[in-house]
Length: 285
Length: 245
Picture 1 (cartoon, helix red, strand yellow):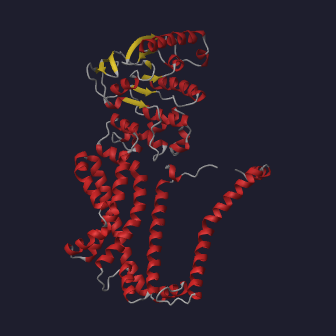
Picture 2 (cartoon, chains in turn yellow, orange):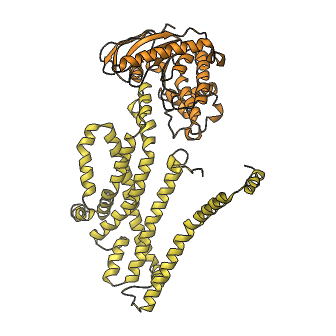
Picture 3 (spheres, one colour):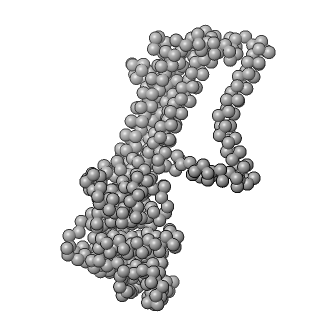
């Protein structure tokens, strides 16, 4: 649309249009400003509560002290963060491979699906904290144990979503593939996998958060310290030492990691689907 | 090339003792109320279903690749561009895009969509999607194209336009068409033979020849001849409905 047309249009805006434009602008700005404002407000309230009630820092540290701890303990916390992130990402990668692999296997053979699907469900519904101690008895390598725990939590959404996606390919398209004599492999690669992509990406976003949770829970259970300990262990350790500010600092790092993983996977999803999928469509006003 | 003759005797719940002879170059409409087994007949012909009794015989050199299909929905792959969608029948036969690029572009040109080859289906209107679907069905130059109520979901203006274009396309590539429809007007305008079917059980009531010469155009659509054929087909359809009830 040319600038001239645009200005001509602007002239005929009626009251409804003006209100609609104002609402849209408000939404655009508010989406970012409001959460930040709430955050600042909460921080101020937190700070005031601590100061006015003279709460000692070993019970509840103020936000300033937490921030200061985050900086002074940065070297140690960052090292721990790297360990946790490493476990999380590895678990997520294995969850994707395992989840998608099993899903493909399930759709290729009904027998395999009938045989193994119930066990996938059982693994999913048994709380990880209940299984983790056993895992650490039988698995010698600490990293392998942590990975296994995180994977157990994370793989199911990938599996169930991908299975659903593989089975929801358009029936007419399926017929078309049959009429043209497509092989199993062609049908899988050209029809089922693309159809499953949006579902898979939905599962992936859930799995990203869950693998972080799995990694943290597993660290809690594994408990052992040493050089290669992650954030969860740092939190436990700081708790024993009544170093509450460090607990908060580590907690902030974990939460931030979770948010970054989610944002990253959402971005990935948007990039992969923006050309064709309904979810990525910008709707006309 | 030898003529495609097909004899078909189904005897399943949806279809009872249906016989149909299709000659090369025919444009046949299957016309009837819902549940008369029109779509079942197409699925049998396309080998997606197998007859319980009776058989389907192809004469001449028929392979599965000699068939093009258009469904009621455009049935395009939303993740693929228009050109990639049209490429599909070739792709499933192991032909690379560069090998068949000319055929794909020619098919798109015939349906008037050569400018949209890099568009995605969601960017197209309903009529344009259907054109892509038709281009895909004829890109391999099959001898037989099956169409299952392809224009039922479109508005009338778009449908008239597509009907005209379909006849031109058929003339251009010289294939045989079996066309399932609910619409009397559409079947009269398009076909040289209308097979009227009844429901419960699905069966053929009668066959009406439409002996108007091709090419047909808007003049034919408003002629007395057209009106007469329409009346004949409507009566036959009423008879079919009456017997079913």
